[in-house]
Amino acid sequence: MSNDQDLWTTVDRYVTDQLAPADEALAAALAESTAAGLPEIAVAPNQGKFLNLLVTMQGARNVLEIGTLGGYSTIWLARALPADGRLVTLEYSPAHADVARSNLARAGLDKIVEVRTGAALDTLPLLEEEGAGPFDFVFIDADKVNNPHYVSWALKLSRPGTVIVVDNVVRNGRVATPDPDDPAITGTREMYELIAREPRLDATALQTVGTKGYDGLLIARVLG
Ligand code: SAH
Ligand code: DHB
Ligand code: MG
Image (cartoon, rainbow, N blue to C red):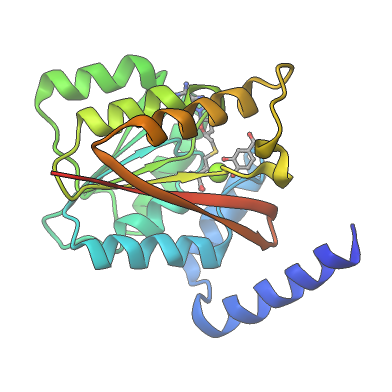
């Protein structure tokens, strides 16, 4: 680890201790995810809190998440919803979905959150057929190669004013350089290009450093 990484981690810990401390459900969600062998790629605590604040500021009642893992980001998102709110989260891996369901039940969020298993490109059309949208807030954090498709689906399931957030849009700075050998970078760059030419979306991205290294979050707003 570089000294920069050590400093970013120290500062993230300070910020998190002050403003985004873990409670029992959040700590257990991470511990049980690790115990089940899930990769340790959930958003950082202060990023989870940031998502929670965005959902609150949006006044969202209907949230879509693509990429559940063990439900850690899901807990932060769902805690911003009113009692009659709803969150649908899409997860490819049945094993990840099982861990998430258990973590969400422990957090008391199983009435609000539905974890749907399957490849998101298969389950998104089903959501559309059911008339599940429009969603007020969409968090995209799954397989990066499909990011352009996920943004297109988020737009399809949106309304004017919907907020779309995409995780991992900087990837150690690699996003700025085309890399035909890395489908995740190619997919993310295609997503930026799609958003840039989409007149219904207004967007920016912010670089982030912290416990998760150097990465970034994109935020987009659906125009009328
Ligand atoms: N949002 C989570 C982290 C998600 S990690 C958090 O911050 O806590 C990415 C997740 O996307 C993994 O669980 C992976 O299994 C899932 N995933 C990968 N490909 C997918 C696909 N095609 N459809 C849905 N989920 C997918
Ligand atoms: C990876 C995926 C993520 O969603 C993340 O936040 C970090 C890493 C990955 O697939 O490597
Ligand atoms: Mg991520």
